[in-house]
Length: 122
Image (tube, rainbow, N blue to C red; front, side, top):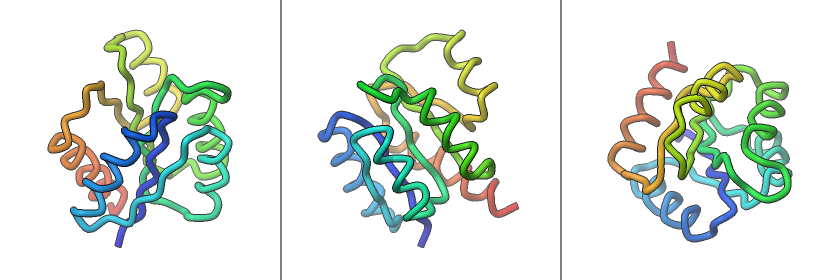
């Protein structure tokens, strides 16, 4: 079973994504802060992280940089409420694998996650 870490400061978003991904057979963990996310990356060793960009404290871009130091091969899909092309380019250059915009389309998230898992399997 593939492990996924959902990182968002909004508990409602985490809950919806966890329930959806669990129903699809993934082992889903959540983190409400960037610092918790980094701890869980080390402890849980997820295959993929769904990471919100805008969070209080340690923001998503800073978390992305730290995740890539911990495990450069970890799949990171950024989630943002703002559809900003320049921001998208920046996060992709920093090592994110993809980005999706809110409101979240659960079917699209499933496709992105499955595609990344297949890619990681080589």
